[in-house]
Length: 114
Image (cartoon, rainbow, N blue to C red; front, side, top):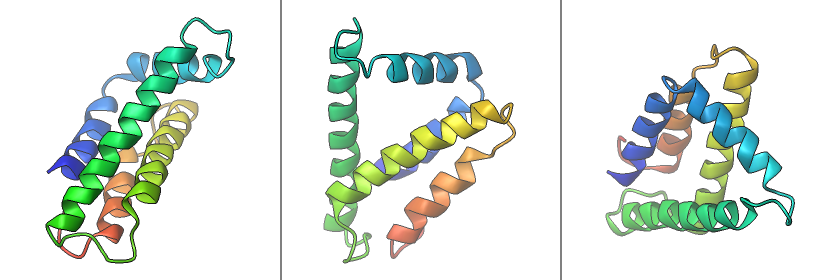
C-alpha cells in the first residue's frame, strides 16, 4: 500500500505545477550549507528515504519484493527517480508522464502486481 501511495502522489503532483516547481527550486538552492532551508531539506530527505525504505521492507516482509532488491538502495533510487522526473516534467512543460515511469520502476522490483 505504501508503494502504491507513492505512485498516487506522483499522479497528484502532476496537477500541482507551482508546488512542484517551488519544491524543486528551493531544494536545489538549499544544497548550500548556509541556506536558511538547508537543515529542513536535509531532514526532509532523511525522513523521506527512511519512509520509502520502510515501505520496501514491508513489501519484503509480505513476500512481494524480489529477493535481490535491497530496501535501502531501492529507496534512494526511487526518491532520485521521482525528483529527476519532476525536473524533466517541469522542463518539458508538464508533458512528461511521470506516473507510468514510477509505477513501472516499482513494479519491476516486485514479484506481485502493484
